[in-house]
Amino acid sequence: MAKSRIIAATLAMLLFQACKTTQPARPSEYYEQTEQMPAVSTIYVPLKIYKAELEKSINTQLGDVLFEDSNLADDGLMLKATRRENIRISMNSQTINYIVPIDLWIKKDLTLTNVVAEGSLELTFQTAYKILPDWSLTTKTELANYRWIKEPVIKLGFANLPITPIANSFLNKSKADIAASIDEQVASFLDLRSQMKTVWQELHDPVLVSEEYAAWLSLNPQSIGMTPLVSSESLVQSTVVILSSPAITLGEKPHLPAVGTIPDFHYAAGQGDDFQVNIRTEIPFAEAERISKKTMAGEVFNYGKKKVVVEDIEIYGQGNRLVVNTKLSGDYNGSVYFTGKPKYDIRKNQIELDNADFDFDSKKALLKTASWLFKGTFKKKVQESLNYYLTYNLEETQDYIRQQLKDYPLAPGIRLSGDLAELSVSHVYIATGAIRVEIGLQGRLNVEVKSLGF
Image 1: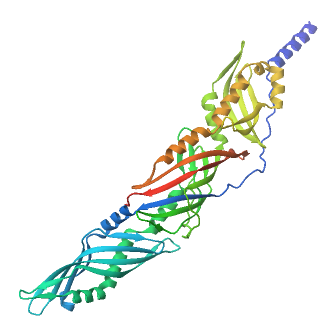
Image 2: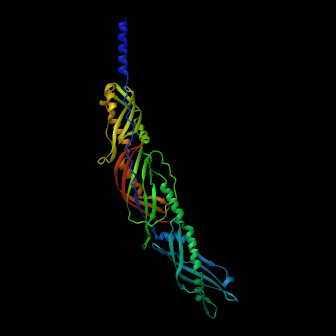
Image 3: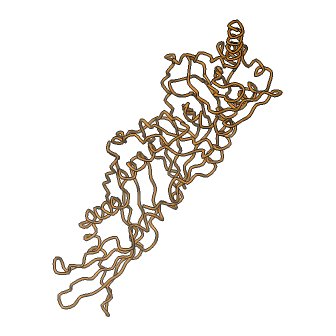
């Protein structure tokens, strides 16, 4: 009897051991010091301001009445200068020249009576401007020249009284006041410093570039400058030069960093419409897990009468390799660990896990209790899923950016256009908490100002 009990206990123990799932050891988690500083990119953005639109804005803002002296008691003379036609301008790196056609209304006190005369002339103003380090704009306008088109004459019945010398004298005395009036009005609608502070703030704000992948682009600007203005027959041109370290992250919107004071204005060197931008793309492990679970969780794998269900996925790093912990239930209960090294496949134009396979301890555990998993589609399916969902699809990214660059509104009347010629991967590596990819973009950019809404 005792002997039969021993045999029964032994059989039960063997049966228990046979049913028990051997768990592989968890691969250690560590990260190599492969952190690389993102390359600084220089972005050249050609700026084209159409003269017709600039003149339209100036004419709208300055209004019709340019100067008015309505005090007859001081010097016996009243004067009103009204814009007759649109102001015409020309610009260079140091000055703005205005040609202002005006109608002049004059009232003269002749002691016994007041008489009125009207004339037309063309004024030429020259405005010297300077952009200060804090991006504020200072101007100094002077009346460079004037030319009478119709000289003012008072008709007194028996004779005409020319008052051009009087008007000339008055213009010479008043030209400083007229120029100061123009400076004041220019300053009121062209607040460059406020506009650039807004631009600097917006350059720091991450932009959602893909809802599907929850991809956010952060420009991380370091400085901003521009080349001197150059004027041609129909255009005023410059190049905005931005130094930045752009980055793309997947997942939640990156925290907006505290935006400091806009860097001092400086005239920058370089021009053209080509750009070469180095972008750091970061795929956080948490986001990779979320994307993988979206299709893998609940997936059933069968081999004959055996089956397992994917319950959960965990992703972390081990040196330069990625570890994927696939938690299963069913005829195998527990974790199975895959490892693979992220690698860019030029032929496929995508990033995938190279030589993804069960880690050594997982192989030993499966050989003892679930060797049938080697024979099914489990491993292949997991790798295909990871390759698809952990890959930042470069072709889709390139197409998306190209579409955005075709015609992108920056502000009312201001549009950015361009083309993405090439997208390439220079480096893929595992960083603490994420897969990082260094991407290079090459193409051209152009900003056109077709109207100004100051």
